[in-house]
Image 1 (cartoon, one colour):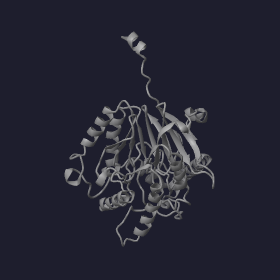
Image 2 (spheres, helix red, strand yellow):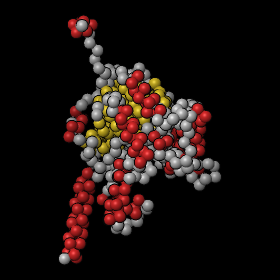
Image 3 (cartoon, one colour):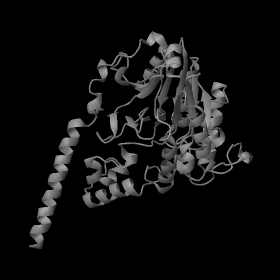
Length: 410
């Protein structure tokens, strides 16, 4: 009787795995659109000739190759040429160098790291677009105790190369938030989400060039910024997503659940389904240091969302998960643009309006009529222009009443 029960449970489990695998294969690496977004192509954005500012949001670019060969850098180059006649900003959302940021000279990864970063900076130096880098967990030596020195080394390299002391924010590994004016309608806010999960030294206070003396003041300052800028669109850039349907949100593929050792090495195809399920539950509800459920980050996320949800209309963008995702939650916009050089599984559905497991990045375009549109650009076939995978109007200025209308109201 016991044998029959075990056999039944085993067959049921394997059947569920096969069914899950079949469903996953049907949509894996295909773009997902929520029902409300099915007709996105019929929504016409203003002509590109009417743009007044454009912001490229490029995450996890740290494994890209040479600009004339790498598909994402070629797509970025296309965007840079496209916006060369208007004001523009390129924001790099962290994990700018894999695998451990910029190590010291003599380290086995130093030469390769310098080359990877130089590829990006040489491309940017050809154009007038303003570049802003922020740090991710890999830039902080994967969160290890000496990570701050790795971050400082990268900051110095970038700011010296671009001859711009504002090209790496927040400076010195401080918490932020740091504001950068785009124009009267757009404000960019940069935060250091890695600070909250970093092991070892984390700069805080005037002694290290930081504005904040107490971490909790981060949320006070952020709310002050949002309250003072209700009249315009605020774009907040960090490394860690606040909403995600991917690995750092506890979403695994069937293969990862069945063969969990593939996280260590992709060829470790040893079936351990029970361990794999337990590991998935651990990543989803307890969390490794880079996960959304990791207790220090979970506390940070709860506090920052409490602030953000009071100010609908803002746009929060991050990298970290290696895919492209867009969510609209409580009137605000949340995005993941982390597939600058790698791709990972992303589950469809949930709160997502769009997601895709593919290389690319997101763009915000501001137009003369005040609208701001989100674009998702992915590399085209060899020799072809980038592919527009999704777009959506995410900001429309509130029309002001005419004098006669205002007098009638009074």
